[in-house]
Image 1: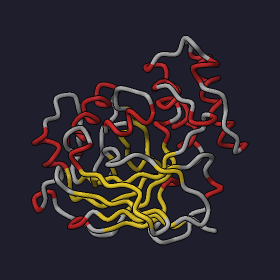
Image 2: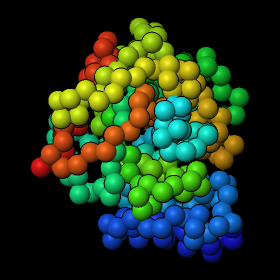
Image 3: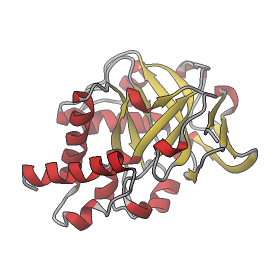
Length: 261
């Protein structure tokens, strides 16, 4: 795609945010768009948000589990940016109308203590860089009408990022193997899903390695203090005003998101 087309595609998505109305798929408006183009469109929006005063606070890996890939009809992970304006306090009411088509999913969040710069990052490097982990709920959202997305659409749309709620119980990686960590997801007091850390590329740590090595050649580092969401342990579930969602991750603790009525 020519630079002008990249800017036009980014403007299409930014207008969906502004108007609060989903748009047609990017791939429909720009059928020549590749995944590389989609990341350029994503970056164009990130530059716009940062110029308006927001701050990059981390990254997310999307579509890292087979459950999510099957749900969204794709066959590979992607990544997006987490900005300060996306973070919500646990138990504090979240305005559901801020989102267009919100869904929620449980994740194990990494908080970094050291910089990770790919390529060449190993599992050992990734583990050494993690300060602690937290239970988390990610609010995913799509600016594409009816979630009718291809891999190009979700990448261009900042990996369908929406919001993040972090739990408050930190755990050191040396204290726990993340692969067998189980999770139950409750929506409105009813258990809707169960999952495990191993559903995320075999281990959430593998998703962290994939992310560092994927964005490193693009000149993007994972910085100390950044939050990394490695991918969902279950399918994503729609949420609406008045919902309360809790993820219980056993020894990792719980995290609750409350949507204002």
